[in-house]
Image 1 (cartoon, rainbow, N blue to C red):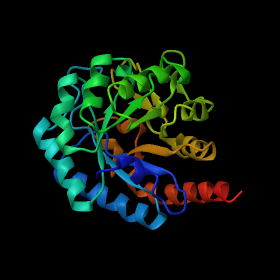
Image 2: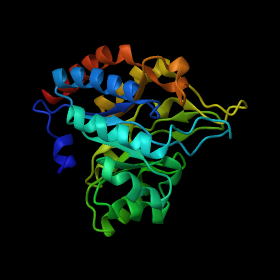
Image 3: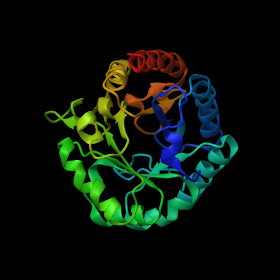
Length: 272
């Protein structure tokens, strides 16, 4: 995928694009099956689709939390998915040295929200030439993301996107300020709304993040209505047994109808 930004804007109907998949790569067949099912519906609805899967999870609360099946094994699965379905893939990185490791296997490098101010990480991602998707820190105002975006651009990479994923509200909740979508669009880059992570309930005493999956459609509808360029949705065939972030993921079988309703909203808005 040579021009990822052009691909994300390629819907003939002006639809949003979608980053979706499991929180973490749990195995090859699961990744292939999820990507295939999502691609089928996104092709039908003219939604440019990017498969999402973390090859490794680093920001876990507990030491015994699942972190991955092995870096190279997971990265090779991501590469297999993109070649099998001819779709771009995205994964997140946590250390500067991971940028060069992951870049040959993916099309977009994602910077986790907690790390969005880490200069060395942003520069390392930028220098790969891949698109860099920066998640807005839960502790930052939308306008402050101009500095993170600027670091990527100053490193010579104009292929950058930014993702809203909620703002810390008290100790165990997040809220989404949708004013941030048009505000960050002023930085001349695609703005994505991370629907499922925005519904996390962090800092639980058990050391496992909670969530509100019952509110996924509410947040997604609002994101589409205010004009978000893209949506980010983590999904799994059975979130109850997912190895990471199951509490806030969407059950895969519910995704097609959700995307149909969201597409209807977007097309209605486009026709005004």
